[in-house]
Image 1 (cartoon, rainbow, N blue to C red):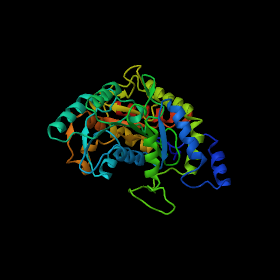
Image 2 (cartoon, helix red, strand yellow):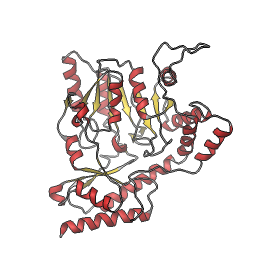
Image 3 (cartoon, helix red, strand yellow):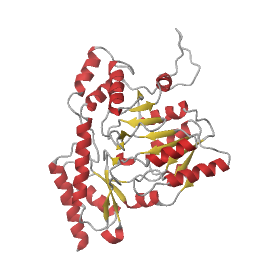
Length: 381
């Protein structure tokens, strides 16, 4: 059996251990320390906007705190993109609020502006004006931010960007994660850079960051004894994890370049495949980090479906994965309001994520290509 080719595995840059050793030597192994502060500064500099950054234990934790800081409470409603990972929607329930899901549009696969406005107007007429909007930049592709930010501003609803998959992606030259009132990043093991596990909350003001840090360290009041006037959480990133992040930031641009190169490999390979479309930027306003390269298969034209190709790759020890199952189709959210058509549903039915890691080598890519071409040929006979 050939070695496993993963969908997206961690890729160390070589300097991470320097920061970890430094933390051990100085005994900074807690959820605070020089690496945490420096990692936050590195992210702030990279985003190149007037933002503040709080390093946390996960992107999910960041989204939870964003909702709290924006004042979302029990029985409120929050609009969320349906076509996403469950971590985009779950924190809504953590604060006792209710998700309202909207469909995607076919160009970016992200939140459909028309469905968003329909959802807002429907909830307003029912006396339930949404308290926040969560837009996701799926697989690294920026959403239609011109329209979405305009709608959010017009209805005076705070916009939260879930940029967990989109560090380094830009819309009209501006980094994803800097458009919303608050934004979240993820550094999970499969992301474009990793801190083993971790995330960050990107804030517009220092007051918001200070509140996030306060809540993420158990909301301890300023007293010599342990006193708490608010519910807090154990959400702060450790100095060890932040050390990994500092090393990863040094190679972030290289990682983006590698993933975009992988994406071009798939564009070239599938160029003459009838019925197979590679997910790509709609126009030059969009720059995706192509965290994951994905395809959509028209079974009638291609002669095969998503699952057949996935299994063929799996038999050769190559990992691929169906696109996200929409939240409004998940058993846990089946009673939540949903607005839009069936764009997300069709993408889930026909789409597949292919190996995209920045550590894929030429031999890996050739192996993937040979398996897919062999599979295509067998379906033509």
